[in-house]
Length: 220
Image (cartoon, rainbow, N blue to C red; front, top):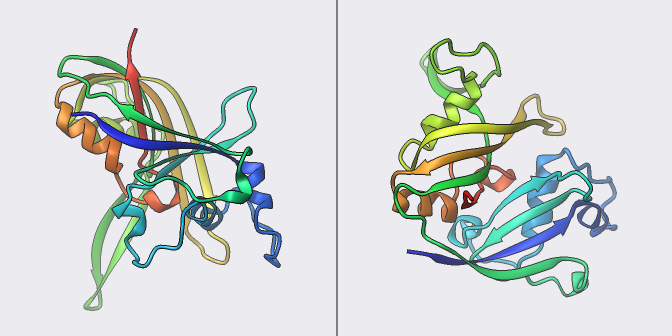
């Protein structure tokens, strides 16, 4: 089955300048800025699950020759009268890709592993960024690529990696960082329903901060 969604192109420089009343200037590499900027496109929701309920996902795009922008996907339309004529929004229908269909896709993923350890009777979560080395001798993939292949294995097989970019965003006044890897890939659909769910609801953690959005098109 296909699904309807809204796609919005939100220039980063516009987002940075949108809230001039903030005493401290926003930084584009601040995950909190990215989250607030995107959620600020929508009306005030009454519950804390607004992002997931409305399938609001976004990805930082850096295409040569274009100013950086946030690509925002959502079930609901944006409500931003002050940005009329500045941002681009359109409603689109994503097709359903039949099993066996080769596709080209882009995915932003929070490439970390999580495990729970217990110290002195107290449990805590340990987050470990996934490295880009060494290459697997059998598959030729690096650890981050193997992580992507595993995460998408319910929907896609035969994944080929075409391009990759890594961003490490620092959370102000906090020691941890947010690691986002953006991959351009080719793959073959093996479960169309699983792929549709991933495309609509996202995949992995940190969706509120620009991870999890997968967009695709049929390979020529």
